[in-house]
Length: 178
Image (tube, rainbow, N blue to C red; front, side, top):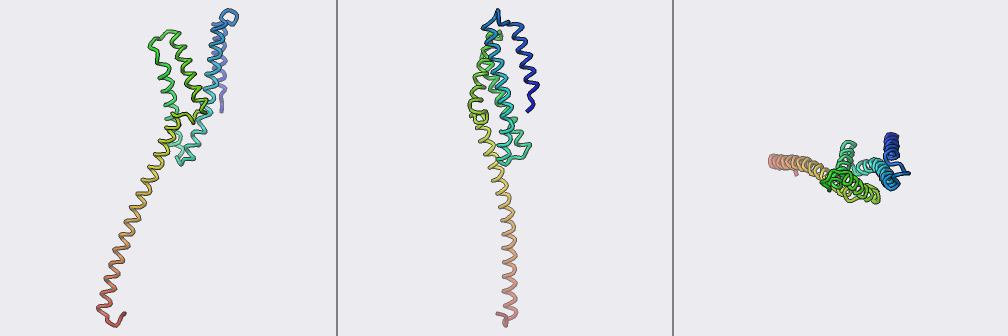
């Protein structure tokens, strides 16, 4: 996966931290922001690396490419909604609240990382719904096939009854036939 853009962004942000919070005069702030940046970067990379295995899981479950990517999109939106929920717990829009929201988001994403992203309950529910939907589609197809078979059987039954009637009439009209 091409991550040069993320690496460049991380480096640029680190340079900003180094400039605004020099380690010599702002040791604690520099350490906190640098650690948070590193953690965020690692989380982004592992999240991006989780997308393809999720897609493959959906494909293995029988989904077509477009539906599999659609489920990956549902997963991504759910993750972003989780992030938004965690970040927006504070109504204050000051720097402290923003930093606190960032820490809480990192904590949430650590939970995803610990469960290897696609094993997180949020993702498991998406996988379960996908499985149910796929089974529902298969059941719908099976019922449609059964209706076709039922129509064919009914048609054959009608033809058999007609042949039986014709054969009885033939025997009645030709007593020498047995």
